[in-house]
Image (cartoon, rainbow, N blue to C red; front, side, top):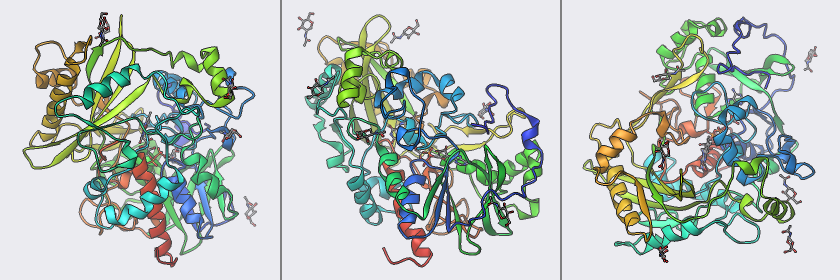
Length: 577
Ligand SMILES: Cc1cc2nc3c(=O)[nH]c(=O)nc-3n(C[C@H](O)[C@H](O)[C@H](O)COP(=O)(O)OP(=O)(O)OC[C@H]3O[C@@H](n4cnc5c(N)ncnc54)[C@H](O)[C@@H]3O)c2cc1C
Ligand SMILES: *[C@@H]1O[C@H](CO)[C@@H](O)[C@H](O)[C@H]1NC(C)=O
Ligand SMILES: *[C@@H]1O[C@H](CO)[C@@H](O)[C@H](O)[C@H]1NC(C)=O
Ligand SMILES: *[C@@H]1O[C@H](CO)[C@@H](O)[C@H](O)[C@H]1NC(C)=O
Ligand SMILES: *[C@@H]1O[C@H](CO)[C@@H](O)[C@H](O)[C@H]1NC(C)=O
Ligand SMILES: *[C@@H]1O[C@H](CO)[C@@H](O)[C@H](O)[C@H]1NC(C)=O
Ligand SMILES: *[C@@H]1O[C@H](CO)[C@@H](O)[C@H](O)[C@H]1NC(C)=O
């Protein structure tokens, strides 16, 4: 909270860039592993590493979110319960509708242009909790040798055994507000050819012509997720420590050897060291956070390091002779999301935003007493999900995920159907430092990864899937198509209304620290997650996943973290896995 480089509020002070006397050691303990970032990846990684008995310090920049970890933030109606705003699934929507409030409360990271969470749990503390078991084609398409489906099977099963998730979030076993979802499921399963209804996590490979209810990592009507599973088991071990409100600014290295991290805490700044020679720092700060730490540590492309050197923070960088030239920030990927079809239809509405401060009294009572009812679900009913595979003229099969929400339109009720292009897409973008001198430490998406592929096959896949779904929507009894406009060519409509821009982003950023089996051109980490050209530094987060999977990605990151933990322990002489 203390270290808020909030540029939005114009709070930038030059003082924070002055060279600091980083002499004080904030801790005299050294650690076998320092994991930086307590999010979707850092939490399961720290848990796995701590299973070995080696000492593990998990550093998280944000404050406690869930009540379980000391979280305090909550609306009045949760007073007296063991819940915060982060624990109640339905309160998710409020963050999206009130980003300024979430930024002011330091929930969102104010130093990235994209939306990301900077509290304990990272994205898992604030996201929609969608939790899809990755299929074989996901691993085989987006991961390098050593991380394919056969390699990932055990880690994936381990993750889903510990955190199975649910397609019925409410504890009474009922789904609420499903009128729109039922109409759509009926339309999809009776279309020609019909979509097949499946429970997606029972058949993770079925992502072509299938429809499923939403799957979430929620538990007993609460958010649950990695904070209620992997963090609980890690915290029971004496060799594990979680330290909150601690921002890692850079890694410290002597030449190529990492010795520790430089941190800023509410008590001041200093260093925390790893065990000499054998200790390791693992960056799990998310695509933006990890890239920022790497840049500030003199690791990254020359253009970014030069930009930083010329900024007020440049005085804190290692000398240019020690810079390590790696393609950090390239190969960025994310799903473009297209809210392309709007249908006016008689469906239920629910005020999920109003529910933050003034929930419907009966629904609040039901939730508080039994963790049941609409407040155990997220946002206006977000259901169902369905998938198409479209093979392009380039021969590549692309997955399109569709989702639907029901609720109030302008002057009627209806549903918004969203297409999200995933696995197989070939467009890529880039992240880097802001070029604006007034925001020198802000990480930006400098090139969006949408519809810039050479053949245009990414765009063609969306057009084809949208035409198919539009045909199905038109056949729904009593439905009126609001968008696309009647008679307009679908491709023209998409080009005009959904041009490539940040407005299409899905918050599913991956790929910015490219992993390959061996180091080489364009590669940032090797197949053992080691940063190329550095000793004792790893990256384990969404950045090492090479592209977006077929469905919302976070289970991929959790399974990758578990597998990475096994690989790192093995490098350090642990037993064979
Ligand atoms: C609004 C929203 C909704 C989403 N919905 C879904 C969904 O329903 N399903 C799904 O699969 N995915 C969803 N996602 C995406 C998913 O949450 C992210 O892809 C995932 O959390 C990324 O995992 P990560 O471990 O790479 O990073 P994160 O989970 O972002 O974790 C990074 C952690 O590092 C910390 N950190 C950053 N910098 C530092 C530093 N310098 N020092 C110390 N700590 C630091 C951060 O505070 C954070 O806790 C959503 C994302 C958003 C933003
Ligand atoms: C670390 O050790 C030094 C020297 O013994 C001591 O002065 C300092 O107070 C210690 N710091 C902490 C945080 O314990
Ligand atoms: C709140 O208490 C219930 C009942 O004991 C428990 O199941 C749940 O995990 C707790 N939740 C949090 C966030 O502490
Ligand atoms: C909670 O569940 C119990 C048992 O089913 C029921 O009797 C009670 O009315 C419920 N409480 C609320 C507030 O819905
Ligand atoms: C709702 O109204 C706004 C403002 O008039 C308009 O821009 C938008 O297209 C309308 N949306 C729908 C779904 O009709
Ligand atoms: C981020 O990058 C985009 C595209 O290059 C640019 O238009 C925008 O101004 C940048 N924002 C900041 C804050 O640097
Ligand atoms: C369509 O609307 C008419 C008139 O309101 C109604 O009688 C009919 O039942 C509706 N059909 C369906 C399938 O909802």
